[in-house]
Image (cartoon, rainbow, N blue to C red; front, side, top):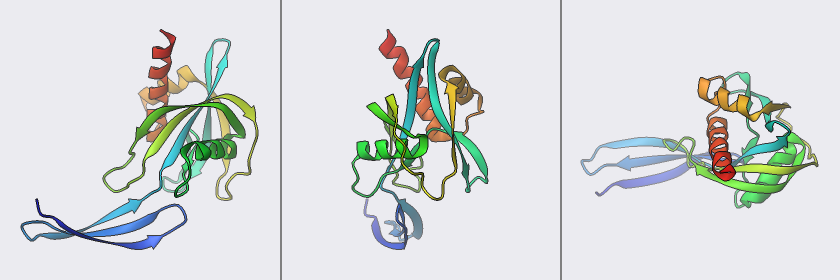
Length: 181
């Protein structure tokens, strides 16, 4: 298939850029497509073992795109060229005030491959120790400890609406079932 494509950056910020692709198909049809070029992001599942199961440190923060405060897992954008684990510790400390003694990857996923190159990596954060970093200036975050069983139920019944958090919680639930057998 002989597809011609020309690309140019139309906007660039500190954490992502907008590229416009001009595409010409073999039949001569032309169209433009906007693509968000993104360095990637981490999604963290801060997990604390308690007497009767597990607690997850969720966060509540305002999201301007949906114009409301939502419940979600801590997450953040990786710097261009930044190491995944360095980013994971930084974001965990900024958003929850804790450092992880142990980070375990639960894989990666593309949250919106139709228009973005963003790749997200999931980490379970364990052996938490209080070690805060200052929060980003544009973030007002409340840490909300919740029983894992409740968060799993919320992922299934629609009360948890953030996609990365739903994926993270359900992968964690599966991971814990497999490692406990």
